[in-house]
Image 1 (cartoon, rainbow, N blue to C red):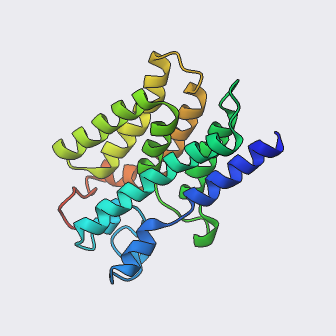
Image 2: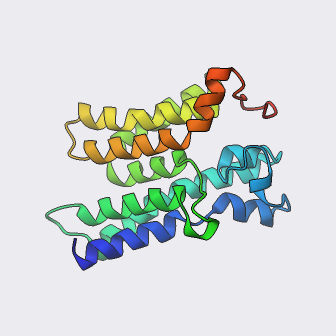
Amino acid sequence: MTREMLLALALGYLLGSIPFGLILARLGGKGDIREVGSGNIGATNVLRTGSKGLAALTLLLDCLKGTAAVLVAHRLFGDPLNDLAERYAAAGALVGHLYPVWLKFRGGKGVATFLGILIGLLPPAAVVYAVVWLGLLLTIRISSVAGMAAAISAPVTAAILHSSLFPMLLGFALLVVWKHRENILRLKAGTEPRIGRAKV
Protein backbone atom coordinates (compact mmCIF):
# COMPACT_ATOMS: atom_id res chain seq x y z
CA MET A 1 0.00 0.00 0.00
CA THR A 2 1.50 3.32 -1.08
CA ARG A 3 1.50 6.59 0.84
CA GLU A 4 -1.15 7.94 -1.54
CA MET A 5 -3.41 4.97 -0.86
CA LEU A 6 -3.04 5.44 2.90
CA LEU A 7 -3.85 9.13 2.54
CA ALA A 8 -6.90 8.30 0.41
CA LEU A 9 -8.06 5.80 3.03
CA ALA A 10 -7.59 8.35 5.82
CA LEU A 11 -9.35 11.05 3.82
CA GLY A 12 -12.30 8.76 3.20
CA TYR A 13 -12.49 7.80 6.85
CA LEU A 14 -12.46 11.41 8.04
CA LEU A 15 -15.24 12.39 5.64
CA GLY A 16 -17.28 9.27 6.31
CA SER A 17 -17.04 9.66 10.06
CA ILE A 18 -18.78 13.06 10.12
CA PRO A 19 -22.01 12.27 12.06
CA PHE A 20 -24.39 14.55 10.20
CA GLY A 21 -27.50 13.07 11.84
CA LEU A 22 -26.15 13.80 15.31
CA ILE A 23 -24.96 17.28 14.38
CA LEU A 24 -28.15 18.32 12.58
CA ALA A 25 -30.43 16.97 15.31
CA ARG A 26 -28.57 19.00 17.91
CA LEU A 27 -28.53 22.14 15.78
CA GLY A 28 -32.25 21.65 15.14
CA GLY A 29 -33.01 21.50 18.85
CA LYS A 30 -33.87 17.78 18.83
CA GLY A 31 -31.25 16.79 21.39
CA ASP A 32 -29.04 13.72 21.16
CA ILE A 33 -30.36 11.53 18.34
CA ARG A 34 -28.75 8.51 20.04
CA GLU A 35 -31.40 8.80 22.76
CA VAL A 36 -34.28 8.74 20.25
CA GLY A 37 -35.94 5.69 18.68
CA SER A 38 -33.37 3.09 17.66
CA GLY A 39 -30.47 5.24 18.83
CA ASN A 40 -29.00 5.24 15.32
CA ILE A 41 -27.48 8.41 13.84
CA GLY A 42 -28.97 7.93 10.37
CA ALA A 43 -31.79 9.66 8.51
CA THR A 44 -34.49 7.15 9.47
CA ASN A 45 -33.94 7.78 13.15
CA VAL A 46 -33.70 11.54 12.61
CA LEU A 47 -37.15 11.25 11.02
CA ARG A 48 -38.42 9.86 14.33
CA THR A 49 -37.77 13.29 15.89
CA GLY A 50 -40.65 14.55 13.74
CA SER A 51 -38.50 16.65 11.44
CA LYS A 52 -38.74 15.56 7.81
CA GLY A 53 -36.45 18.41 6.79
CA LEU A 54 -33.63 17.35 9.11
CA ALA A 55 -34.06 13.73 8.05
CA ALA A 56 -33.85 14.64 4.35
CA LEU A 57 -30.79 16.80 4.94
CA THR A 58 -29.13 14.01 6.93
CA LEU A 59 -29.77 11.56 4.11
CA LEU A 60 -28.40 13.99 1.53
CA LEU A 61 -25.24 14.81 3.46
CA ASP A 62 -24.56 11.18 4.40
CA CYS A 63 -24.83 10.37 0.70
CA LEU A 64 -22.68 13.26 -0.47
CA LYS A 65 -19.83 12.52 1.94
CA GLY A 66 -19.42 9.16 0.19
CA THR A 67 -19.33 10.82 -3.21
CA ALA A 68 -16.99 13.54 -1.96
CA ALA A 69 -14.52 10.99 -0.62
CA VAL A 70 -14.25 9.31 -4.02
CA LEU A 71 -14.06 12.53 -6.04
CA VAL A 72 -11.57 14.29 -3.77
CA ALA A 73 -9.34 11.20 -3.72
CA HIS A 74 -9.48 11.12 -7.51
CA ARG A 75 -8.47 14.76 -7.67
CA LEU A 76 -5.63 14.51 -5.13
CA PHE A 77 -4.28 11.00 -5.62
CA GLY A 78 -5.85 9.70 -8.82
CA ASP A 79 -3.85 7.66 -11.31
CA PRO A 80 -4.96 7.56 -14.96
CA LEU A 81 -4.02 3.86 -15.08
CA ASN A 82 -6.15 2.69 -12.14
CA ASP A 83 -8.73 3.79 -9.58
CA LEU A 84 -7.07 2.44 -6.45
CA ALA A 85 -7.09 5.78 -4.65
CA GLU A 86 -10.82 6.11 -5.22
CA ARG A 87 -11.42 2.58 -3.96
CA TYR A 88 -9.41 3.14 -0.80
CA ALA A 89 -11.26 6.40 -0.17
CA ALA A 90 -14.60 4.63 -0.69
CA ALA A 91 -13.66 1.93 1.80
CA GLY A 92 -12.54 4.56 4.29
CA ALA A 93 -15.77 6.52 3.89
CA LEU A 94 -18.02 3.54 4.53
CA VAL A 95 -16.00 2.28 7.50
CA GLY A 96 -15.83 5.82 8.86
CA HIS A 97 -19.60 6.13 8.72
CA LEU A 98 -20.20 2.71 10.26
CA TYR A 99 -17.48 2.98 12.92
CA PRO A 100 -16.61 6.64 13.69
CA VAL A 101 -13.89 6.96 16.28
CA TRP A 102 -15.55 10.13 17.62
CA LEU A 103 -18.65 8.16 18.67
CA LYS A 104 -16.82 5.17 20.15
CA PHE A 105 -17.19 3.36 16.80
CA ARG A 106 -21.01 3.41 17.00
CA GLY A 107 -22.07 4.89 13.69
CA GLY A 108 -24.83 4.60 11.15
CA LYS A 109 -25.85 1.69 8.95
CA GLY A 110 -24.30 2.95 5.75
CA VAL A 111 -27.18 2.89 3.29
CA ALA A 112 -26.99 6.54 2.19
CA THR A 113 -23.19 6.63 2.27
CA PHE A 114 -23.01 3.47 0.14
CA LEU A 115 -25.22 5.18 -2.45
CA GLY A 116 -22.89 8.19 -2.47
CA ILE A 117 -19.90 5.93 -3.01
CA LEU A 118 -21.62 4.28 -5.97
CA ILE A 119 -22.36 7.67 -7.52
CA GLY A 120 -18.61 8.29 -7.58
CA LEU A 121 -17.41 4.79 -8.50
CA LEU A 122 -20.10 3.08 -10.57
CA PRO A 123 -23.01 5.36 -11.58
CA PRO A 124 -25.14 2.61 -13.23
CA ALA A 125 -25.12 0.69 -9.94
CA ALA A 126 -26.08 3.89 -8.13
CA VAL A 127 -29.15 4.23 -10.34
CA VAL A 128 -30.25 0.64 -9.64
CA TYR A 129 -29.53 1.10 -5.94
CA ALA A 130 -31.63 4.27 -5.75
CA VAL A 131 -34.54 2.68 -7.63
CA VAL A 132 -34.53 -0.39 -5.37
CA TRP A 133 -34.20 1.68 -2.21
CA LEU A 134 -36.86 4.26 -3.03
CA GLY A 135 -39.18 1.73 -4.61
CA LEU A 136 -39.25 -0.44 -1.50
CA LEU A 137 -39.49 2.55 0.81
CA LEU A 138 -42.58 3.72 -1.04
CA THR A 139 -44.21 0.29 -1.17
CA ILE A 140 -43.43 -1.78 1.91
CA ARG A 141 -42.27 1.24 3.98
CA ILE A 142 -39.76 -0.73 6.03
CA SER A 143 -36.49 1.20 6.00
CA SER A 144 -34.25 -1.72 6.94
CA VAL A 145 -35.58 -4.00 4.19
CA ALA A 146 -35.26 -1.25 1.59
CA GLY A 147 -31.72 -0.45 2.70
CA MET A 148 -30.50 -4.03 2.76
CA ALA A 149 -32.07 -4.82 -0.61
CA ALA A 150 -30.47 -1.73 -2.12
CA ALA A 151 -27.08 -2.68 -0.68
CA ILE A 152 -27.33 -6.18 -2.12
CA SER A 153 -28.24 -4.73 -5.53
CA ALA A 154 -24.80 -3.07 -5.79
CA PRO A 155 -22.64 -6.20 -6.16
CA VAL A 156 -25.36 -7.82 -8.27
CA THR A 157 -25.23 -4.89 -10.69
CA ALA A 158 -21.42 -4.95 -10.66
CA ALA A 159 -21.48 -8.66 -11.52
CA ILE A 160 -23.91 -8.09 -14.39
CA LEU A 161 -21.65 -5.31 -15.71
CA HIS A 162 -18.56 -7.51 -15.25
CA SER A 163 -17.05 -4.75 -13.12
CA SER A 164 -13.83 -5.34 -11.21
CA LEU A 165 -15.53 -3.54 -8.32
CA PHE A 166 -17.66 -6.62 -7.59
CA PRO A 167 -15.55 -8.04 -4.70
CA MET A 168 -15.32 -4.70 -2.95
CA LEU A 169 -19.01 -3.90 -3.38
CA LEU A 170 -19.92 -7.37 -2.12
CA GLY A 171 -17.88 -6.63 1.00
CA PHE A 172 -19.60 -3.28 1.41
CA ALA A 173 -23.04 -4.89 1.05
CA LEU A 174 -22.20 -7.50 3.68
CA LEU A 175 -21.10 -4.75 6.07
CA VAL A 176 -24.39 -2.90 5.58
CA VAL A 177 -26.39 -6.09 6.16
CA TRP A 178 -24.31 -6.84 9.28
CA LYS A 179 -25.11 -3.39 10.67
CA HIS A 180 -28.80 -4.28 10.24
CA ARG A 181 -28.58 -7.48 12.31
CA GLU A 182 -30.86 -6.10 15.05
CA ASN A 183 -33.38 -5.11 12.38
CA ILE A 184 -33.25 -8.65 11.00
CA LEU A 185 -34.13 -10.03 14.43
CA ARG A 186 -37.07 -7.62 14.67
CA LEU A 187 -38.21 -8.60 11.18
CA LYS A 188 -38.23 -12.24 12.24
CA ALA A 189 -40.21 -11.30 15.35
CA GLY A 190 -42.63 -9.16 13.37
CA THR A 191 -41.81 -6.06 15.41
CA GLU A 192 -39.83 -4.03 12.88
CA PRO A 193 -41.53 -0.61 12.54
CA ARG A 194 -42.68 0.87 9.27
CA ILE A 195 -41.90 4.43 8.28
CA GLY A 196 -44.52 6.71 9.75
CA ARG A 197 -45.20 4.50 12.75
CA ALA A 198 -43.67 4.58 16.19
CA LYS A 199 -40.82 2.18 16.93
CA VAL A 200 -42.07 -0.97 18.64
